[in-house]
Image (cartoon, rainbow, N blue to C red; front, side, top):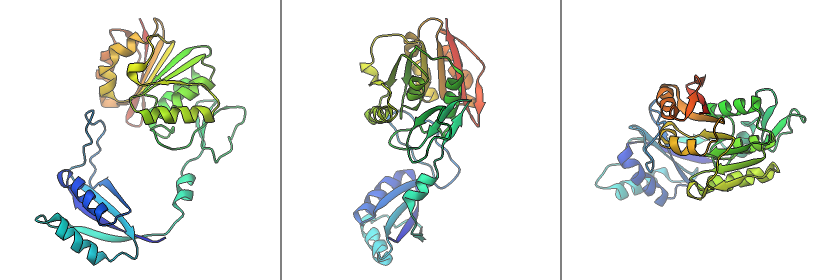
Length: 290
């Protein structure tokens, strides 16, 4: 099926309403994109900020009457005018195949691999995590996940109790389980993340106990992994310390290099913090519980 897309120049205040109107006009999909180089690394909890210059892109069937769409928009947006826009043809391609081709087995350290299900593991004797890109964050492609996986590859987690706090897709929890952890717990605020973790654990034939934060058992672990963001990591410092046994390590990521010092200071009351490890502009912090 062939498609065309309308690309509108918009603003944070107008983008949501424009999106709603385009959907009412029959758009098959509407997306927001940054129109300038203005990354949003860490929004406030409960907010979904947009870029100062936001592109609103609406996808329509190629047979759509473009003049009619603009006429409808004009009436529905009145008294506001239709923002500047351009129309582009979208090449008819096998999007599913191209999406699958973007994901290949990835190696972390000496023995840990992440493999999408449509690939055979390159090394059958390695620790292979079968994981498809899906609902929740975490496929190993992001530097923060890679930093944690590289640390796990060289760690001794055999017979340990491990908590993956902010488990997302469950990738770190599953890695710990496959590396020999005795018990692994995944915690996340998003119920969909817990569902994704359980689905991925089943695919990898490992047991992961998953909980919302308020339901997490009152316990301590031999290793705590938290690949979240700097703000939540700072606010959770005492709580995560209380979950970690004396002498046990904590591994923190999801932190920009400019945030490393502040996050590290937040944990120094409970942990001996090591120097940060950098990958691109992201870092990993490791501490040992006093």
